[in-house]
Image 1 (cartoon, one colour):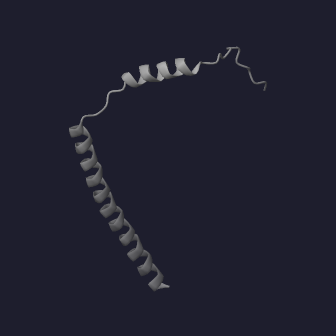
Image 2 (cartoon, one colour):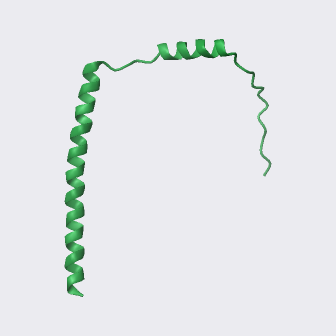
Image 3 (cartoon, rainbow, N blue to C red):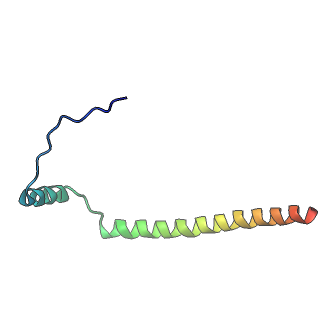
Length: 73
């Protein structure tokens, strides 16, 4: 299986052109507002707590089941 080589010629970008391109792309970014950032951070914190409690309950349940099974042996 032969690999196909790309026929596109890559040209070097000058540092000045690179900086202009970066500035152009950065200006297209839509940054969240402070309110959106705060709301998202609070939501993430709540989800971390909820999922931590869920996995604690699941782990404790499985641990209890395994202990009960081992006591039968």
